[in-house]
Length: 356
Image (cartoon, rainbow, N blue to C red; front, side, top):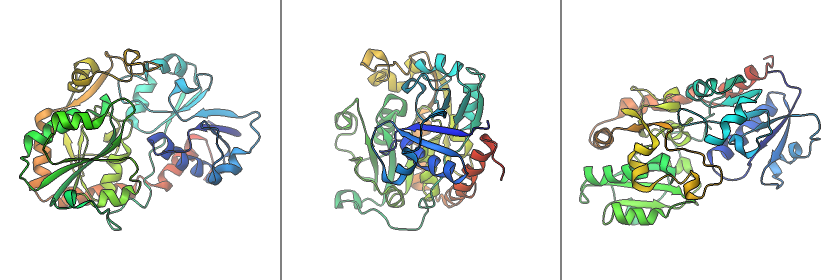
């Protein structure tokens, strides 16, 4: 879609997937020559982008980089889905949209069923800082002593299914084995320490605070990355871990398949099930529905998702621990040859009909 003036509406600060990608997208869109104004939903000035925040807001096409329910009056959206449909409140909004940008071919296929808007894929651009060589994070002695370290980075919500991850690790590995599981995450709805006590008490599982910001160093200090997610629009930490040279274990589903395959990752088989029938939902419910106090009721029990095979999770972890994954890791690093700033820049130019 050819647009003369854009108002890009987003949350600039923070390290959520949306915020991190927003900062990259804005820089690339400005570099591509778009007349872009930035509308920070936090209503604060950000020095790096203040020259764009101060632009005249008049006569601009609004593109919201968030769930559509954040601004239902927008006609342009950059958003994702991890299920067989958009988030519940977004469906009627997207039907009226004129432009939808998204991160993966999976998301595009889903959105095509719910809107007649023009849809373009703009992949997550991997920053060159995500690479195998470089500074490594120094853990405390209690963690550092382990010879093999699994890492998982996520927000503790039902969709990420941390419960299966904990159970599989604790069932597959004995406490006296030279292996640990490190979780770096955050939660608005749960106390992860409670679940670690219930599922992984006296085992080699460690919770790191979100305040640890040097993610490339954290990745490089570990041996393997694992996620038991029920679906991803893209999966930023998954691709970042691959770029940093970790053996990466991930479900074979959704937006992950834009970059992960049997040659560069250990893919866990999945089955398509309703959210209410997943192990995660049955363990702790769905915090993103109105029953748990969420104002929009984003994810409904009848949504379809892709649940990773329970035994497949354990087998993949054991294989990563015991086998030489040189081939898998070497191919994983190569994803940066495609998914980089230049690649995303070309996708932006194509989406906005900018001549190269």
